[in-house]
Length: 132
Image 1 (cartoon, helix red, strand yellow):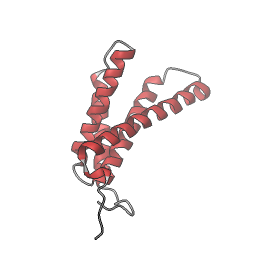
Image 2: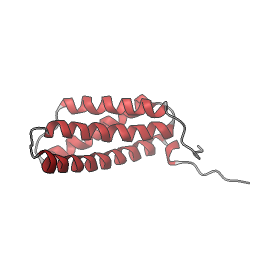
Image 3: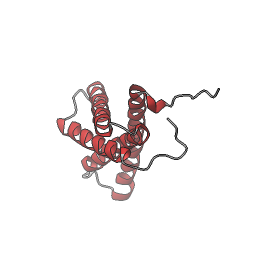
Image 4: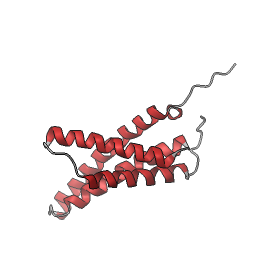
């Protein structure tokens, strides 16, 4: 008899954890890329707040898009949950390294981009060769 191995995406806690880790990695990589563009191309630090917001939104959106695409249910709720978890991690790291907590505007930004990514992920095409 054929045994069916369950996917990582069937467990909600595991899939949210994986999505958050992917999101943090993508935030870091996009922040580094945008910092290089800001330093070498623009030569001006005035747009650093905008670039950091773009990196945060892009990382959270892509992580929750993946979660929604492979989970195929509860996109907005799990997207918001991923955004809140990413904000919590950023707040803890901000207290450790900078001595201050991040603003509430970042929480709103993360929650909105997380919810949007989750919704678009659930409503996107089903991944090829994916079996639950």
